[in-house]
Image 1 (cartoon, rainbow, N blue to C red):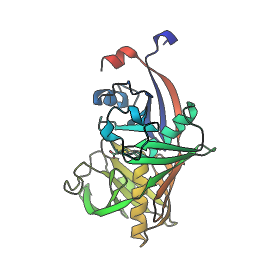
Image 2 (cartoon, protein in one colour):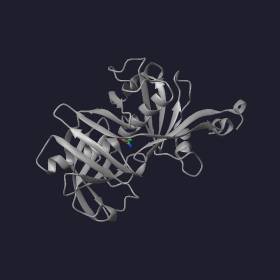
Image 3 (cartoon, helix red, strand yellow):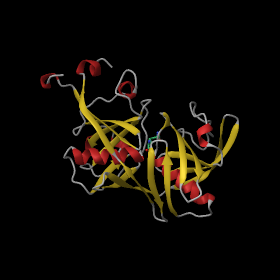
Length: 284
Ligand SMILES: N[C@@H](CCC[C@H](N)C(=O)O)C(=O)O
């Protein structure tokens, strides 16, 4: 595409292979419909991703009800969408990739970056080694529930990280789970749907996790899910605070849960920048 023919700018990035199309939209002029999100995330007819991150000033979000009161209008806001076009409150990998994008594109200085999300303001810190940490807030346990995969019932804890999770600690072989379909959930406990994690504690205080994400399907990582998994693994060990190294199919992250909040640290990678064809975009 010649520069004069440039369409809609995008970047592509991932955090432990949880991947995102990033759309810079500082002044909020982009019409990001659910149909456009679905097309962008489609791995055959679009760029392919688990979700979309629109980069917009909080004051220009275009949906005032979505910007929590603690988010200043000048703050960069992560307008997160799932691959099915639905809106979610928070994305732990997304917010780390978002911060990496802000730095690489000159929109923020490396170091401490406050990022607005529908779950509230999240303090993000970029590290020189490419890692990014984010303060994920308090991980609130709000119940217990069950789900079923392949005829096996799993019991888990319901954890609120701005978005809802059911984190199930289990001794089964995670590789044997068929997560192609959404595991069923209790509609009363999770009226807006739920992200479901299967968590296998390892011998040395580390854990393995697989996840089925609301609005996406199985993904290779879920940042909020790794925090929920850590909360569940700690509870299974009789604790409410501590740290865990969490291995997901797409890599490894570290989670710390304290009495005051939780922190997620892991890699955040940008892989491409380009332009969407304007005609393709306009036709969606
Ligand atoms: N992959 C994300 C979570 C994205 C939102 C989730 N699918 C939901 O609908 O709540 C993460 O890294 O946290």
